[in-house]
Picture (cartoon, rainbow, N blue to C red):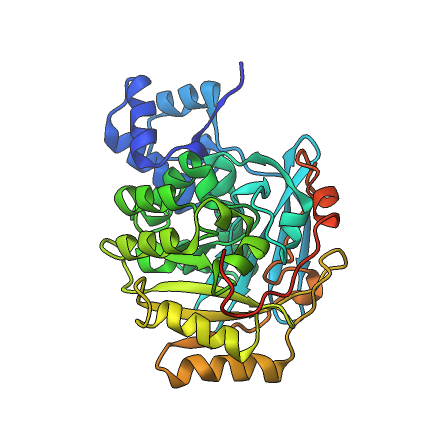
Length: 378
């Protein structure tokens, strides 16, 4: 009989589990702190728990980390870990150090079923969802590994921000995602601010609405095109949830979100979505001249090429000109600094090793990427 992985629980779930063992909630709180704040996996080390409880837990439960298959460190300090999740699958987690914060990019799936044209993970296909424990194990390992690396005390935090922007579409793994988010936010866990935990989605509209009610955190939306015709090709999920539905969901989300704006991610693809006409159409979409105006920040992302994409990065001058159109109209627009590209840890490069159950690579080879002029819509 396999042991229960305590990383699979948020605090309420752990309290319910401990109640089943005949223990009161305060014991679950103590246990939760040992696991997440101190990084303990050995029940014997949890000295403020009764010995009888420690012995009981040792027989039925465990804190199950993910095996680390590889660790790479970039010249810019970015660190990428490859975690083995079994059955020939691996997922990647990336730590990005900045002067004022430390950001961990966490995976939610082994592979991704969305199949965005510019994303190496999408080209790889989809194997399976990660469990809550597998999502949290990435943060659990990174936080405590980095504390050791930087010789910090238990009270000092390395990771101030978590972005669910690794492998996978988080909102297609909703039941595992929400308990993981709650553990990240819990003051007895990692104590992260809702403003500093971001879920990135390609636009799973029903789950955006559910997250607004269940666990609102910061939201980033992978937009990448200013009209449905182009977005249908770049982000296939748009065919199910087109732009007008997505933008209305974003407006609803802001009713309870911890930030008063949505971040729209826009990967700059040479000759595909990066012309001045595209910028003007994007401006009309987000800046109040269209019926679906959403308070937002635009984050322009340099494309990180990979051999099978058939796409190239927009020249810097093109990116700057695109940004200027938006900035001159008063839209907050940033250009993402590429980090960790020397270890394939930059945006869109996470690929891990996934057993493709969807034959995504074969399908994508058959479908060319069209150049769609601004103004075209489906």
